Amino acid sequence: MVHGGDLSSHIDSWYAASTPTQPLRPALEGDVEADVCVIGGGIAGCSTALYLAERGYRVVLLEAHRVGWGASGRSGAQAIPGIACGQHKLQSLVGAADARRIWDISVEGLRLQRELIARHAIDCDLREGQMHVAIKPRQERELREEVATLHGEHGYDSIRMVEREELSTTVASARYIAGTYDSLGGHLHPLKYTQGLAIAAERAGAQIFEDSRALAYRRSSGALEVTTAAGRVRCRSIALCGNAWLGPFAPALARKIMGVGTYIVATQPLGAERAAALIRNDAAVTDVNWVIDYFRRSADHRLLFGGRVSYSGLDPLGTRRATRARMLGVFPQLADVDIDHAWGGYVDITMNRAPHFGRLESDVYFLQGFSGHGIALTGIAGKLLAEAIAGTSERFDLFARIPHHDFPGGQALRRPALVLAMLWYRMRDLF
View (cartoon, rainbow, N blue to C red):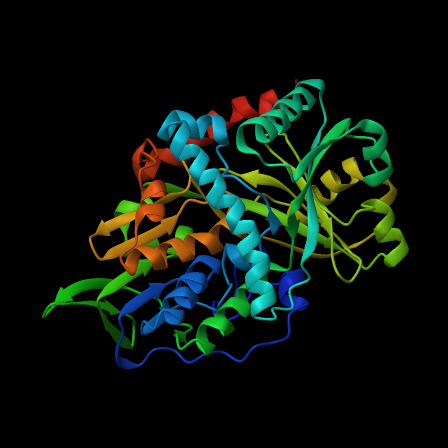
């Protein structure tokens, strides 16, 4: 299964199969009072709920399916600093000073993730280390320039170059010619992490309702009201953290993002020795093509391999077969290995690949558009949103100042237009 099934359960992924079954939280029935209604039970929503509850706010979180049902619980789960559009593009959008401050917040997000895992004893298979690897000389030059910039202009010394000889003994593939290693980056089990944040938020006092899709909101008697099929939340503020799954709840936000399908497979267990031989340092690895391959070892000695994207929004035929073929292009020595799980989901992207934070109204906040860089950035984003609701919005407003445009073409033509635009980038991967 790739995109769904029973909406009250998780999709058939290795993440779901390797996570202890959690009882379904009750759906919202009747009226409930809160200071803040958080919509969306992914990392961003659970982080927002946690930080608000720790500040003493009465928090109600509404999740349409299960906590971690969307991208947060099925992603590639590589923790990477920065944002998806890159620092150079970000500088052109907000200027050098704000771009540097946003970079620093993203680095804080990596440290915050480790702090949250330790403080709340979240068992989520956290591993240190993330690598970007180059296939072509042009990509190697770009990585060297990036490392020089991060060292010289950002004072970020957690990253270093990995030359061909070291890389060949670290990643057992002849495909790559050089890379980088970031010791502050890493990888984890995203569904366990998201569920751990939800439990932490509940312990802090937040109420979480599952199978409770938010249908609409309005103002009534000086308060905001969020309605579900069987209930209503009266609150002072709303935090929209549903990303690509908000649907018609906030049409103005839907025009700024698009759900892009991405796909992952998990091999059968390889055994500790064979798995370790693939990635000696147990880091997460991604190449630097536009259409990327990304992979890492699991705690039970599988290879998790992701690749391909569907800008058309359709699930391409043969996802399992096609993703396995990409895996064998990197690791041909796995030709005898079966695939136990294949799954996918939507990543919400923006036109400029920068995250989209802001307000629909003075008391209706939103986080979306992480564009594939969400595993760490969503956690710090929740903290920034909690700060803003509590009255300290400087850091949230840094992100809110990033300009964003609607995808062109309206509902009928915007996806075909994106497909055509992406063909150029795919062609660039060949040279």
